[in-house]
Image 1 (cartoon, rainbow, N blue to C red):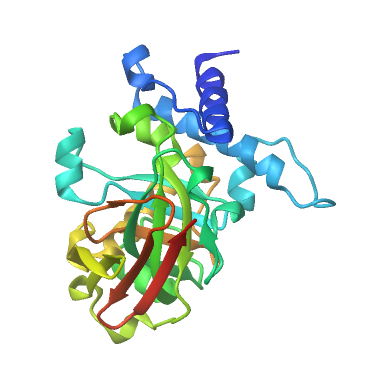
Image 2 (spheres, helix red, strand yellow):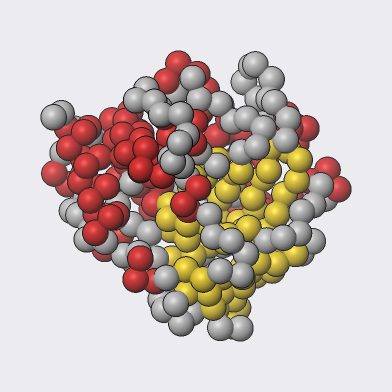
Length: 276
């Protein structure tokens, strides 16, 4: 077993048993971004194989999890968080079917290690993207609708003591997400100035706007599309049917059993999530 496989197994067990591990970058100083994405890919493949519906065609091909993915999340879209980690770019993670929380359903807190929540804009991709590096307007043309979302993030790395490579390996710290019922045509508004207020127990604790997400949420999704094309020789692409969580619009909030969160947006509507 090589280092990538060993770390992928370690993170898988940490997720399964809810027992965090020491930061990989503390133990393997030579771990680089490419290594971290390889680790992410391996442990997401393992999860995807276990989530494959009974009777569905099986495959052992590398990248199987991308075939089952609901979409992707973009992380580290805040300049403040990038500076904290000493990087100048975001990262991405895979959204699997088991991560989706149906509207009105609760999230068990004891299924996670140290959960936090953040409010973001979800993109529903409805049209194929062009076969070239894409720009924000390409994403706008390809997007069927946008919706309010709450993402639950969690760290399989102990105490959230993460560096850039740690969070990449840990699937961009993704855990779960819920999307509101209201769908809006993004061509009808300016997402850059779309305001957001995230409340916990009715108290507003986090605010922001679309500009906090790489200057514009469309830029975050364009970054994702181009980055996916650059991985694995372009095998994996952002395609129609995918959901994209474009990045936090404000500070994250810690979550625990009994907490109720709701995020309201200027024009996109609202979404809520309860922890049990």
